[in-house]
Image (cartoon, rainbow, N blue to C red; front, side):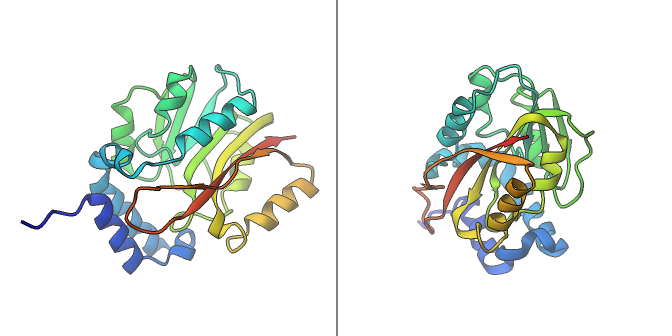
Length: 224
C-alpha cells in the first residue's frame, strides 16, 4: 500500500515546480499560489511541523532573552501563521501578542490558540495598517526566506516599532545577499536607524525534512 504524502510534502513539491522562489514577494501570481497552498495546509500545519523538527523556536526564545524583552511588551507577530512557534513565547509570559498573516485560514487556526489580543489578515507586500510607533517588538519568524519575502518589509516594520524597541526576525542565509538584506541592514545602520543587538549562529530550519538543508539566522535589531 502506497503511503499518502503529507500535505507539507505536497506543498513543497508544488512550490518547487510552480513558484519563482527568488521573487515571490514581487509576483502577485506567485503570492496567490502560496496563499492557496496555505489554505489547505492550515489545519495540519501544527501537526506536521514537529515531525520535521521545525527549528525556529529555540533561537527565537534565545533572542527575546538576550535582548531583555519585557514580558509586558506589545508585540506584533508578523506573518504569524497558526501561532506556531509563538505559543512558546506565550508560555514564557508574553501575553500582549498581536498577529497578522496573509492567509485567512492560518489566522483561523491561530484564533483557536487564544494567545493573541488581535489577529488581522494582511499582506506584507503592502503597508502595514498600524500607526507609527505602535509596538515595542515586531517578530517575524520563518517569513524572510526563500519563497516568501525579501527585505522589502523592513522599513514598515521599523516604522511601527517604538524608538528603543526591537525587530526580532529570522533571515534565510541563502537569500541574505541575493535579496538585499546585506545592503539594507548596512544602510539602516549607516543612517543610525538600527543597531544590531545580536545575531544567532546559522541553524538548519527543518532538519528532519526530506528535502534540502536551508539555514537561517535569528537577528535582534534595536531601533534607535
